[in-house]
Every structure is written in C-alpha cells, then in structure tokens.
Image 1 (cartoon, rainbow, N blue to C red):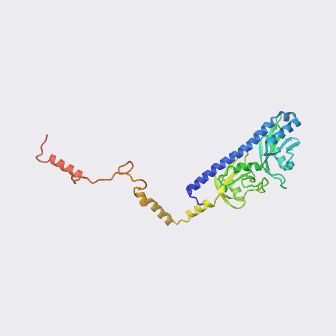
Image 2 (tube, rainbow, N blue to C red):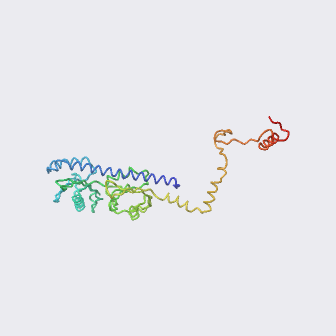
Image 3 (cartoon, helix red, strand yellow):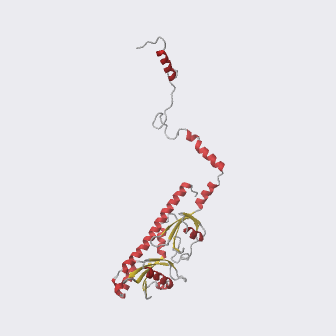
Length: 323
C-alpha cells in the first residue's frame, strides 16, 4: 500500500513513540533486577557469612524470578557460589571467562554494571545478560552479587510494542550484538549474540533519528533508535518495511517538471476555487458568510455623484434664494 507524505510523517511519529516506549520498558525490566539484587545485597546473612541462610534466600529469589537462570556471589579472592535451579543444570556452564570479567569490573569500579549478551558456543545454555551489584565492606567492595537473566525474557517486551506484524524490533548491546529480537522464535535463537547487519551498525553510530537499514534477511526497513538509561551502551532499534514509503517517494520523483507545474496551476486556478460551492442544501442569498447579490438601482438612472453635483449647482447658481 502506497502512502503519501502526510501518512509518512504519521508513520515516523508512531515509530518514534513506540521506540521510546519500548526502551523505557526494557529499562524497567533491568531496573527491577537491579533493585532486587540491591535489596539482597543488604542481607545480614551476607555480612556474617551465613552460607545456609543465604542459600535459602537465593533459592527463594530464583523461584520468584523465572527470568533469572542463575545467581552468583563472588568474593575478592575468587571464591564463587553459583546457584541455579535443579532442573536447569546447564546453567553452570555459563561462560566462566565472561563471568570473571563481569565481576572484576564491579570490584574495580564499585558500581553496578550491566553486561552485554553472554552466549555459550555449544548452544547448551540459552543467551543471558548479567546484572551485578557491589556488596561493600570496610572501604572496599567485599562481594559482587550477580543475576544472570534470560535474554529471551526481553523478547516479550519488544513484541508488546509492535503495532503491526511487519514491524521489526531489536535490542543490541554496546558491542553491537543482538540481545533480543521480536522475530526470535525460540530462546536459542542463533542470531542472538551475533553482530548486527553492517548497515544497522553504521546507522546506530550516527546522530540520525531516522535511518534506512537492512535486516539479517536483507529486507530494507525505515528505523528509529533510542538508547537505554539502565543499561548504558544498549540501543533499541524499531523499524517498518521501507518498500511502501520508497515506492511513494519514487512515484513523486518520476513526475516531470511540466506535469508538476500543470498540476499546480490546475489546483490554483481551477474553477472550483473561483466559484461559490454548490454542495449541500441550497442557501438563500444574504445568509451569513455568503455575499449579497448586487442589485441595479431603481428610479432615476442618473449616477449618484452626478445628481449631487447638479443639485449643488442649482442651489448656488444665479437667482438662487438664500435663507
């Protein structure tokens, strides 16, 4: 279906609002995990090192949060406690190197850190991202508490912002890799963790609000982007197929200058613009908003100015009586 310029602007406005809403919802999900971890980090069981109490609380947290695949506590000496559900033993295979890099950054900075997407090369563990918060001791970070969250859990957030089935939404980390896609069909989507298409990666680095890019299947889309606040460096891109809009633009660009000029003249000087509209019920002359018809003067056909001049001459001529 072809669209005109007014419809095109409406589509752009709709995409802009949907993009902003989607990235705010993603931020909300990330902040929920961060808040839960910060509450857990203040538990007394962590302060006194009561492992049994802590494990019980961590198991309860995993039952309440199905989007968490594992929960980890790591100290400065490298001692690690990774807790996962018994029915998901594969969670223990989350990339150890990525886990170590994640916690080392929090130990060094003392700040909350959201990782990029973490994938397992053999495909046994579904893609996740890590949310880590520091647990402070005396003047330094003593422990790091990390939740490994299913990337698949963010897919529903993206789908909720799709107005029509042909819209495409993708969430990318700071390295330009897919964290979640609206077109993923399973939690083990092979595209998640890959680099975005070159056209999309280049467009995300520019300051353009709207841009053309291509999907992994080569489809060209008109997209808008928005950056995440809760996960610095993450970007969300939302787009619609560009074919209808480009077809309309092409139709406008193929018009010859003479045809455009003739069309403008017709619109400007068409009889419909010069005549009083006749649609609807007939209106009596003299009604509000309609000009009154001019009437011919009755009686003496002598123009008014000439009659006045003649009267003046008669009153001031010889023999005129004065009062």
